[in-house]
Image 1: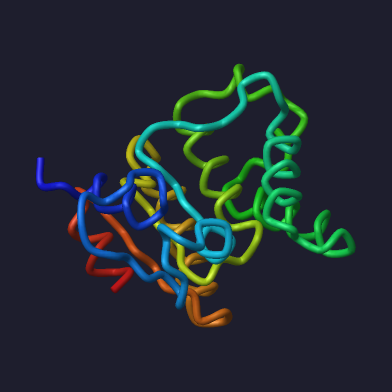
Image 2 (image 1 turned 90 degrees about the vertical axis):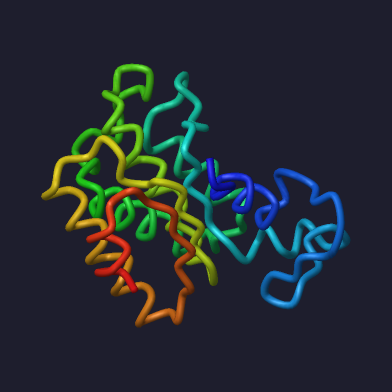
Length: 164
């Protein structure tokens, strides 16, 4: 409809804009894609997990790609999975997860490298209110502690108002 997802795709280097330029964290997303990508986390509307891996393996892979220091990796992964309530299910294959569990895992994956900007495209669709509130509490905490910018699209106006 309004171009919310398209905007996020352009800001995160997934879709090339037809004109103009985009600067994220001081990086031109067309000319410095790798540097720009390293500075943000993304939760897209559509799932992008590897169903053939466990939850833990999905987050480990993301942590390695985003160069989370090895000595911090295990602790950050545990914290991210605990935030979304999946630590006890970390060894389960993603293909056996419900839709809501997959959403929560995507959020954990986006948080593990402590991005400067967190792009969230309808991140809590399909989640129960308790899980949504828990996730928002942690995102607000990260925002304050790490000065992380939140770029959010949502149909839940109360979420948008609360996170702003």
